Image (cartoon, rainbow, N blue to C red):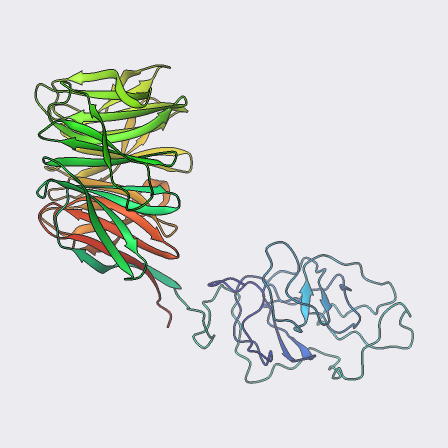
Length: 502
């Protein structure tokens, strides 16, 4: 039964006392009691003619059609079933009489109904023996139109909201999801990356001020999150987890002391050991890390923000990551994003010196394809897919954020979103809801719902100070959002759904 538009029957209580309300252009009503029908209520605007009577059960009764235009009716009344038949039909409590949505033939011996007003089918002696008899406990019906009791509300031919008196059903939007503060962690963080290993979800946090990488995991006994420092480093700006079988690799990109790959072979609580140096002599000022599987191989991309640095794509081979391709040099790149465009792997590279550049996979390497116009200083790019289309969320520290859509050969602007010092524009899926979060340094961060055509609809403001990453985490049936903060406490929000009709 619809939550907002009542197609056939209104809610009538446990004992089906009376009809509370219906909607739709072809809706009627009825009065009844538990176990017996009192009759059907005539509620149409124009009575014309009834062409045929349905037969679906043991007891013949009365049939009413109450739409605006009479074009024929093939409904029958089935005594003692459950629910309304037909595809997508709603379910009624057991023991409630039901209507069949399937057209039924009319026995030839059944008396014709008056074209002026539907009448009850009489129990004449000449009725065919094949027609079932009306049991004695069924009340006698008037030969004319059934009388409408005064306590039955008048029905509208237009769709109506559910009455307020219906228990457990809201007349408006039934639920309202929102993010509420759940926990604050007493440290700042720059990056946050989710992972799952052995069915255990977690988040890797980069803490450049503390010189560490921490793993954020759920404490079942405490009912909260706890962060354990696992690696000490020198100003790590990215701690990127890469699950590899039953092993967890942690790529630590640092501003000093070189970048490294660490390995944990045991379960949660096991120590990390240094596995290899990453791009010795190639990475001067790493800024962002991303990983993807292409053509069956694992690749790692590192954006280098140094004026003389070169962003590099590494490939996993022989137990380590080794340089595979050098991207554009000397561009002070700040972010890269792996995605798929037109069925082919692609890469979007953002930097402060020029417009974002789109690379497409050529079979063994990335080749420059096009750039993205009108966004000369994009800081980061994040993508999402909607109904087969690829969208890109581009954020800028100075200027508004933009949503772009791939049009076959290039990205075109869909929407411009006001931003105030934004370094993160993150699409994500949280508890089955699709959101896009815009982090602002000089204004409250904003949560958008994803609407039709990839357009963003404002949902709520989020008091997250200087956010740098938003990560969803699911713990059983509970859902959380981790917001890293560069200058304040790392915040965790709980995703709650509240019934606004109560």
